[in-house]
Length: 116
Image (cartoon, rainbow, N blue to C red; front, side, top):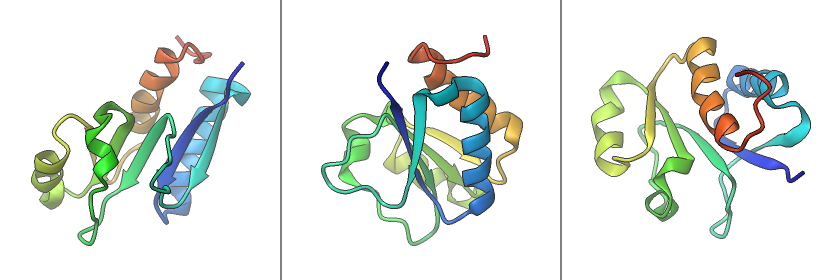
């Protein structure tokens, strides 16, 4: 069974822990999390971008916007919507319940979720 990869672009340790715990419960060992900015040729299954005002949108978000989820402050939501209109946008602070629901969508799409 192939491993599905989530790339988390964030310095938030609590967000990393939450993602790791949610994936462990819902997907068992079929997912892995990698952190840091992706390389130009990177092709993970899902990206979570912890948006900041200095963020530069990579060209890759336009190739497959459904793979990209942005966590943003309310004041930045309009800018992200303009740059990535077909990606998911979640307002910070993101609750564990919200993150669980949104991570559950790709988990179910890949047929890996233990929670139905």
